[in-house]
Image (cartoon, rainbow, N blue to C red):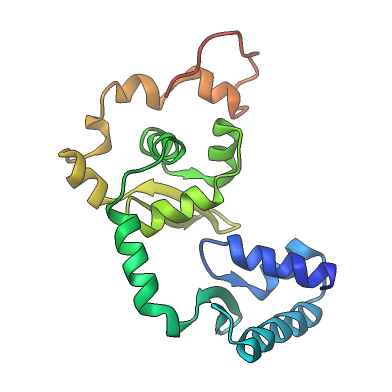
Length: 190
């Protein structure tokens, strides 16, 4: 597999939302025509080999999806996943989103110190977090859903324990480079 094909496949795999041809092209440093050729090649390979994934296209946006033949199995699996307990990393991520949201993925990863792509995807699937695009670059911002608020028995995120203190944490602001002050050895708790 070519390096370019691997990069495009990886991007489509981790993306929580459809990616435009322009965005993919910018990320992999290749012309739109070159990217389109590789996407078509990947899509053909998936169809020909009868794989469990496929590439969907609407206009100039692309996204990976599961094969429709696996729909019942996927539905059953997701039902179990949605009703199952959250992992500690998922709870940490959801807590940061609740107290600091709307928050971008890079900011979230800077606070947590690890890649959050799969955790965010799971939170989106479970309906606990949602994305909205904002800003000139159309960056995705994550926030909690009404379903989460209902589950917690609150009407707004400001009703979370210690919301005022934690949503404006100076330590987190320093981590996000919002202030120039150095971080001391204080314990960071969210």
